[in-house]
Image (cartoon, rainbow, N blue to C red; front, top):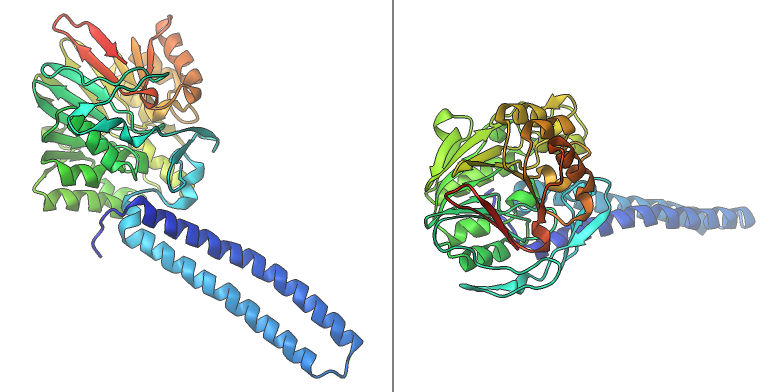
Length: 414
C-alpha cells in the first residue's frame, strides 16, 4: 500500500474511534457482571424458571460479542495506522505521553517529558502569501527578514516543534518541517519569506513534530536534495515512515543524500557550509518497550553545524544521551565551541542537554523551539558552561530571525 500523509481530521477520527472501542471493552464487562449477578439472584429465587439459564447464556454470549467486536476493530485500526496515511503524519496515539503531544481536532497541545501540558500552537492564519502580518504580544513581531544575504528563520509552528529555514543569497534550505497537521501553515510561512524552491530538506529524525509538514512542503516546492540517515529504513523503530519519506522524494525527482556518506555529510548553501554529525544509526531499538524505542529515535537524531562569517550554529534536533548511548555528549565533544545553539529536544532535560555536552559547546546564544516553560534547567546548564548569562529566544512565542554580518556580528530579530 502506498504511504501518503493524511489530514488531521482522519487521524482524529480513527484515534477517537479506537478510544470508543476501548471504552466499550471496559463498560461491557461491568454491565455484564451486574446483569449476571441479577440473573443468578433470580435463579436462586425461582429455581424452576427455565428461562433464567437461557438468559444467563444469552448474557454471556452478548458479552463475548460486545468484547470481541471492539477488539477486531482496534486491530484493524492499528493495521491502518501502520500501513496507510496515519503512520506518516504522527507517532501512534499511545506515544502521547512523550514529547509529541496531542492533537485535539483543532489545537495541538504540546506535552513535556512528564506528560504535562506546556502550551497550544498559535493562530495558523498569521501569514498570508507574500506578506506576513504583524504579530504583536509576548512573541514579538514577525518580520520578513533580509531579501538578500544570510538569515536563519526558526519558524513559529507551535510549541515543541522544529521547522528551520536557512537562507543565503536567495537560496533556501529547510531543517525539519514542523508538526503534523500544520503542513499548510509551514508552506504559508515559507512563501511569505520568499521561498520558491528549496536547495534541500534535512530530516533530523522521523518524529511527528519534525516531519509533520514534509509532504505539504514537497507538494508546494521543488526540492533539490533530501538529507536523511538511510540506516533508518532498516534500523528505526518506524522503518515504514523512513521509506515513505524517501519514496516521496524519489517520486518528485529529489536527490536522496545518505547523511552517512562523506559526499553528503559536507555541503553548502550559498556561502554557508554545513557539516553533519551523529549521521549513522548507533542505537537500535531491539526488544525495548515502545516508549523507549521512540526515545532511541531521538538518540539517533542527525545534527547539523552551519559555519558562516566565522560563526558556528549548532542544530541539535532532539539528540540526547539515552540508556548508555551517549550520542549527545560524543557529538558535542567532536564539534567543540559554537556560537549559537538550537537547544536539543525543545529544551527538555530528562535525556537531553546534559551538562558535559554543553561544556563542550560553550554557546553564546540559545534558540529554543518551544515556549519558555520547559527550558529553565537547560538554560541554567548553558549558562553554567560559559560562566555567564546567555540570551535565549523562543520560536513558539514568535518566529525568531537570526543574521550574521560579514564582521561575524550575530543579530536576532523578534
